[in-house]
Length: 339
Image 1 (cartoon, one colour):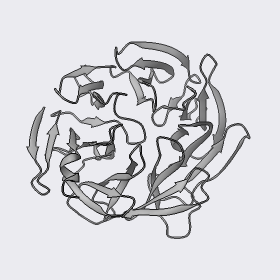
Image 2 (image 1 turned 135 degrees about the vertical axis):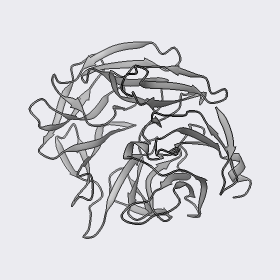
Image 3 (image 1 turned 30 degrees about the horizontal axis):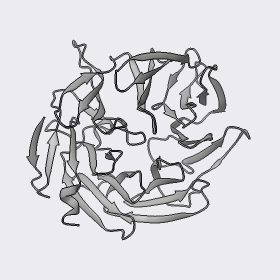
Image 4 (image 1 turned 90 degrees about the horizontal axis):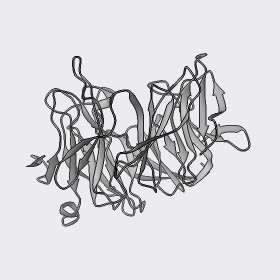
C-alpha cells in the first residue's frame, strides 16, 4: 500500500495494488466491503504462466492482502446485509464464502452446461439470482433458494445481463438486454411470482440508458442517461428524477443512505476527458471531481467507484500506465472539509 496526492484535486489517495496484471475492484452493483468496512475485495487477473489469479481481500488500514478464491471461481459478490460472499466454481457450482474466515461452503448448482453472464446477487431472504447462458444457448434468469434446486424463471433470445435481485424483495429481478452499446429498450424487471417481465425505464428515441444499480434498501435504482445524467427511479419504475450531472459520467453508485452518488468520468463516444471519479450530492446536485485516474484499457479496467458501507470512503480502480486497473481508496472526510 502506498499513499499519494492527486495531482489535480490534491486529495490523499491510497493505492493497494500494482501490476503487471489487472487488479480490479468488484463491480459497483454489489457491496465491495465487509460488514465492518475493515476489508474490501478485488479480482486479480491471472496472467499466462501464473497461478495467482482470483479474488482477494485487502485490509483497508494495513494493506495486507489475503487470497479468497483461485481463478476457477467466477461471479464473486458480497451480501448487502450479511458478512457473506457468493461465487461460482467451474461455472455452475455455487459457494457461500464467510468473509471473516474465508471458509467456503457449497450451497447448490446452477443448470448444467451453462454459465453466468455477470456476478451473483442475493436478496435479504438468501435467494440468489443471476442472468445465465444455458447449455442450449438460450439466455435465462435463474434463482436459487436456500436448500432448493436452482430454478429457471425466465428465458429469452436476447442476451441478458446485469441481473440484480432487489435487495429487499426476492420477487423482483432487474436485468438488461445487453447489446454492448445502445438498445431500443435496455432495462427490464422480472416479477418472479407473477411470471411476467416489463420495461423498467421506458426509453424514448435518442435516449441512451446504461449502467444501473439498486440502492442498498431496494427502494430505488440509479441509472445513467448518456452523456452524464444520473437518474434515480423508484422501485416500480413509475417515477424518475435527475439526481445530478457531470460530463462523461458512466457508472453511478448510491451511498447506503442514498444522499450521495459517486460515478466515474470516462472518455467515450469520441470525447476525450481527464478520467477520474466524481462525487454528487443529491440534495443540491453539486458535482465535484475528487480523484483523477489513468485511461482504461478495457471495460474491465473502468473505475467502477462505490462507497464503503459507512459512506465515508470511495473505492475505485485506477488504471496504471498500461491501462490496467489498480485498486485505490479515497477518504471522504478531506473532501467534506471543502464541500
